[in-house]
Length: 134
Image 1 (tube, rainbow, N blue to C red):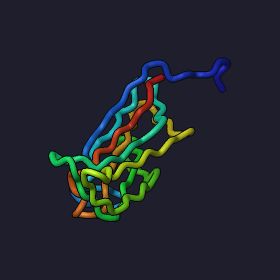
Image 2: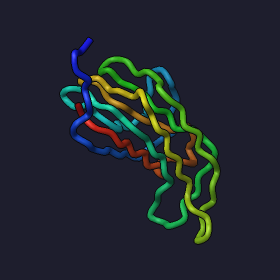
Image 3: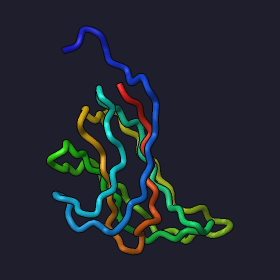
Image 4: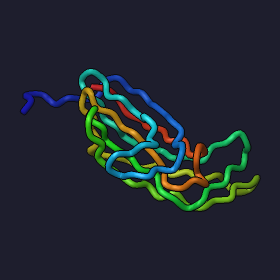
């Protein structure tokens, strides 16, 4: 146990687009790298999923976004985020959800990856992580 507490010192963010629908929750083949831990590890404070396209009115279908921890060898499912069907318009905002984490620490040499479950949401779900490196 450390004598003094460790605080994340270098804030940063990272983003990716969740692509093709995932076919495996144990060995994901369609995942996108979201965050690579700093040399002393990282702490993730929140993950936001938003529908984005070149159009101002992206439409989502109900589905899931999977968040994986990856230690360089093995993927472990960490969280599943529900995506709801939203038909965006000039009066209805596109889909967006933010998850806050108190305990998401990514060890040095490890990373976060994300994927999604539905072909209808391919390449329109932008996933952004906010956190800091130790």
